[in-house]
Image (cartoon, rainbow, N blue to C red):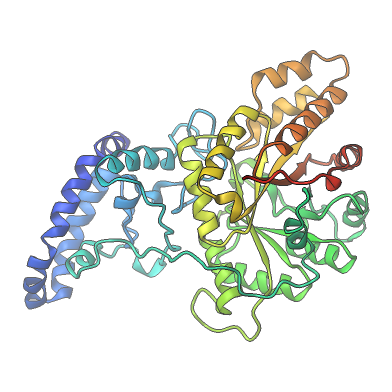
Length: 471
């Protein structure tokens, strides 16, 4: 089955031509289908379609087929069922984060889409909606016969229409013209708030916002929405990270409303890490949404004042909404398209994965500027440090999506004071990325390393630096 799946991607151009030809016959066949009866035709088509698609594409018959937009690679084969591009955890060799023995489904999709683009011109970056669970097993060929040959793409969101309040300090900082500084803090393994507040106090006056992770690495901690609300109550500016891994769209939307009601004004939409690497590998992942569909739904709550179902809210939340990007793992050619999808879906600030590869990041930012994405969303670069080469190597080998060049590891490993050398590397990377046009700020990360991060921020006086704009 895998061999045929990969064959379909390699022959995506020919299969797309065949699809276009068959779709062109639909207007001629539609009257006959209506005479026979749409229900009867669908009942006859369904087993044939299932056999053909299962054989050629390892299709899951989701009822919302998007093969023509995903390079003839079925996105439902993604372990996270991502329908809007690759996650940030693709391994350096292009294999899946969850199943390392398999190639990433979206690596294949990008390759196939590029082949199709040779015929159709520039490849589109459609926004695919969250899967409609009611349509599983339904025929999509019947939709083509009825004149709907393409999947139901989501429209791009418009400009933000909700008010910007004084409490949303991160948005004000992003619009200030100076470098933005954020830091990441994991919620404690505690039923009391003091451990969280103690670590947050280290960054008073040093950062514009504090990210609160949501079960990072698939590990369980205090609820991110509760931890964010605690910080907001005590005068900090939290960024509430919400991952799609653990909740369906009903629970996620409820949490978003709850966060807004408790004074949280900034939200970061994530797909989430795989559970198999965390402390509850036996848990069932949900992935009802991916980051792009979550962004689109959240903006709908804010701008249209309605749930994903279309039901109206009594009071719309006022949120500054962000997403993440990872320029440092494959498929490199699709990272910009994936970022553009997130901006189209409503992200207004972007935080990147750890940056240790400056050449790769400079090339990425060149493409960002070419597409004008730095003018539509604030790009905040992830940097950080750990105290030894061993810790850095462990992170590179075990944290999905983190790439540390061998020369950086060798430099820290050979130093007599590895912690100091790692801090020097962090400082050099910060200085370098802040000189790249289009970079809006720095996002510091380092697991349980808050004191060192606070010292680095203070030492470099980041918040007093102006931002380098593109011309």
